[in-house]
Length: 168
Image (cartoon, rainbow, N blue to C red; front, side, top):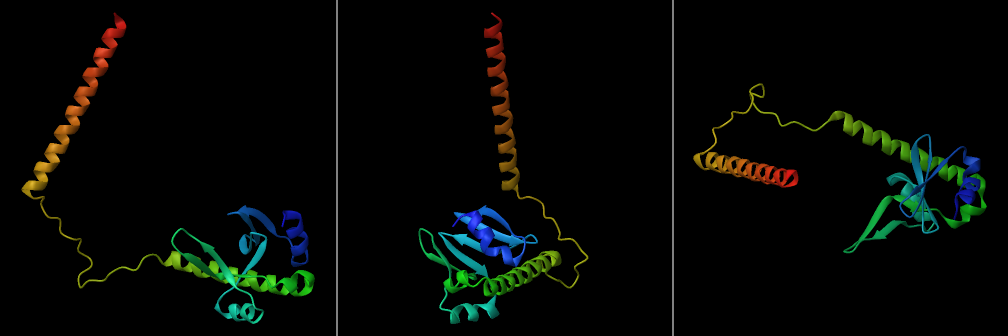
């Protein structure tokens, strides 16, 4: 499947953007990806409600293999082949896929706006108390600083020696 075929196939739907994605294409409208084309198969976006419609058509969800397992992506289902010959019904399925993709995008956006949940304590206005580093921690910190300064000194001496040899 090439871009031209996909553009013709989804032309009745309206303007779509077709971009390279993974080993195939992503098809989007209004900035929302609602279809994937991978290994010459078209997968439409759906949610739990729409998955039953795909199952009734004998379709299957998108799957791919990793080194250790097979991953099933339940949000993208294989387009039933009969829709390739029925542009009117394909538009209906594409609109449904686009709506599911928009709902998923809205859900994702609302989750990120809320931010992480905070743990509440009885007195959350107080900052946690800082403790003094132990004697061992202080010794380790001092040793690291000493090693770093020794390395810098060695590097500086080597650079000075190199400059003096070059000046001769």
